[in-house]
Amino acid sequence: MVEIFLDNVTHIYGKEVKALDSTTLRVENGSLIALLGPSGCGKTTTMRIIAGLLRPTSGRVYFDNVDVTERSSQERNVAMVFQFIVIYDKTVFENIEFPLLVRKVPKEERIKRVKHAAELMGISNVLNQQARKLDPGTRQKVALARAFVRQPTVFLLDEPLTNVDPQTRLELRKIIKELQKDLHQTMIYVTHDQAEALTLSEKIAVMKDGKMIQYDTPEALYDKPKNTFVAWFIGNPGMQFFDVSLKQSDGAFLLDAGEFSVDVSNVSGQLVKYGNELKLGIRPENIQVSSQKKVGWFNTKCTMVERVGNMHLLTLGKGRLEIKAKIKETDVREGDTAWVQFPSEKVRVYSKAGELII
Image (cartoon, rainbow, N blue to C red):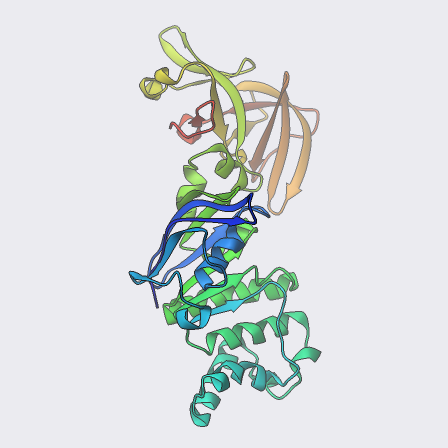
């Protein structure tokens, strides 16, 4: 186990491509965190710098307060599992055993650790089979077992579930989560899939354009995203935004979108200094919808109803605006008038630049 600290790390490929920009990150000892973001955001570069496969252009890397910036992967004792399954032309047993052979672990200890790793992954029944002849899901279990058998200081998982079938993906998520709990090992999970990050991780670092945008718990990222990118990226669908201005009417302070308004009198003091160019954000699942007229609610036209699992995703039109609402039960149908309310406690307000105010 190890605590990892990236201190103001920047990495530039060639002369111009800044893949990582002044990134500072602390991964607590024994925690499982995710690096989450779209392709090209810098998450794999971050992982490779932690692994010792890349030396940062500037900044330092620390393991338990020891500067390891100049140390190799082997010296750092990290184990990596990749998106593209790496399997040797050997039996499953020999694949898992290989890193122990390299480290000259005694035979009895090797056998014990290989069998234990195989049991954890649920592949004890295929130990004598040729690994390359197995299905992709089982091959990835072999790759994971080979990483875990080493007992490294940190596990680095680079989108390891991308190329396996949905059922195996769910199974491996569960295995990884249970192993982390049992072993209390530091793990960093790289993914572009928010469902994986939200399901597995204690904390998530959301990245964009080489920058760490927000590093927080899944709950905080969902409830109080610090800017509009995080708010939009987290969620299915993500948070939606409406350009609004702060106005006074009959003693109340309203966020006015033109087609509707939301009373924010209780927090108006925090908003007045930001001027009138604001963004109102709300998650589709936090919008209240009714087929019946209600006092204080505004009317919309339902243009589409989609089934998403056990939820209904409604597309609602209000003048020039389109509103997405995600609700469990509804009697609203396409073409109906629907009455809508934005609960004030669920509304988030962002500056013109997209930074969270409240």
